[in-house]
Length: 236
Image (cartoon, rainbow, N blue to C red; front, side, top):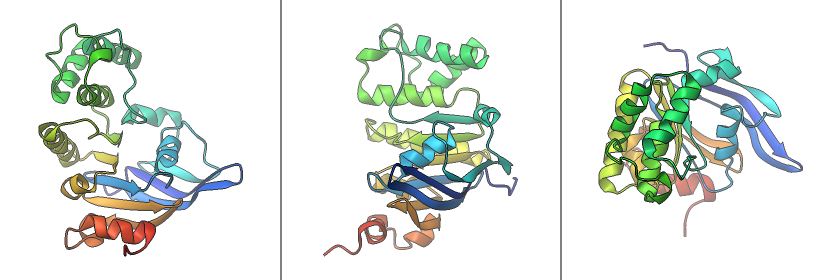
């Protein structure tokens, strides 16, 4: 397995007007690992992911993909689901995924594979707009894994999933990493993160409070305590 980081954030900074959202953010996401991006609301997580995906420019710093400066072509190696699932409500799950396979130049069979992996192959002609929150989360995952990307970037992928769905997602992401790929997950579900992630980066007010192995951040398994300590001081 390569030792070159799949993703490197190097002193990434971003402001919106006078508000500094990210300040000199530096950390790596390694291949073969699940990396959790943690922080309270407005910590800068979504902004950082948007910069990674080329949706926002950084004011300073650099993002590198497998050791090379970020370029639009790198998006072919990244599967992502951010800001909730994006789909056509009047189309079925399969039709929605087929839209993406054809845009990506992939065979129709890839849509069926992704739907199967995400656990929604049997939804037939049911319109996606009528799906439950959990089913919509599975559809977003199916779209993200099209083409077997080397990097998965998922924003709150557990939202709406029942316990079985969360366990299935955890195993899918762990297996993705075992195959030498990188997974970056933004999540507020700290109880699930402790079972899912190998590494973690904690953001607070746009700055890194911790980045490294998860078992070093919370050696006693109490991630919630350490999260609060890093992001808002000790609780009374």
